[in-house]
Length: 145
Ligand SMILES: [Zn+2]
Image 1 (tube, rainbow, N blue to C red):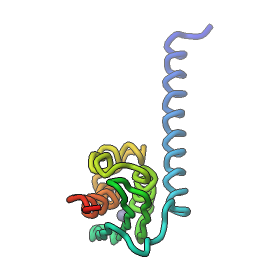
Image 2: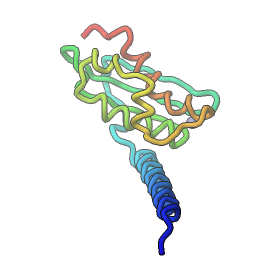
Image 3: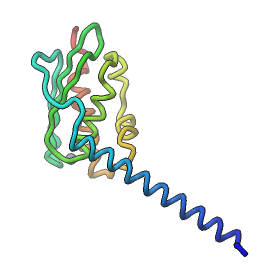
Image 4: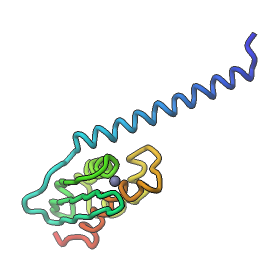
């Protein structure tokens, strides 16, 4: 005979196994962006550009923007550093492409954490937000184009 509490316990176990598996899935997504970053490189004549260094981890990110009629037509980034900083920047460039400047400026730190999907420890927060800071620096105030 199956005890009700055992069923509850097994359901609980299955749920946490499921959560742990999802976590691995998201970590894998981060590593994919790290090894094969999207929108990687530089633009020859960027309308806006910025670079930032995270001294805590030694990460650097640079972003170039091509802007026309208040819209981000193209974006490229270059970076050296840890997987979190590169993956977050890579994911952010995917989001930024084709966005209006206003939409880009409305992106918040919380949006970046939502993109990464895994919990980021306080020590890695600067890594996760480096690309975001670079974007803010390049686009606020908005380039006149
Ligand atoms: Zn880092």
